Length: 87
Image (cartoon, rainbow, N blue to C red):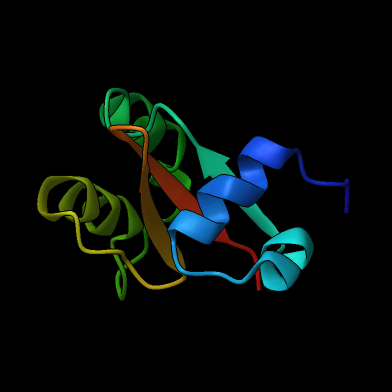
């Protein structure tokens, strides 16, 4: 896992993580998911199956502002960041 930038640490802390946890979190931070949700969902269609529609959960998260399972949302400096936690 690569070392986090200070900006990434600040974003994770805005999502409720401690600095210690933020420095060690295995995640991907999306700065443009809200603006490009359809582009991302098209790329992620292969994740959908009969039991779970992952892309619909992502669309709902962006629309409602409520994190999907294994995701977080942070607001920092009037910008919204979506955090996908890798378990």
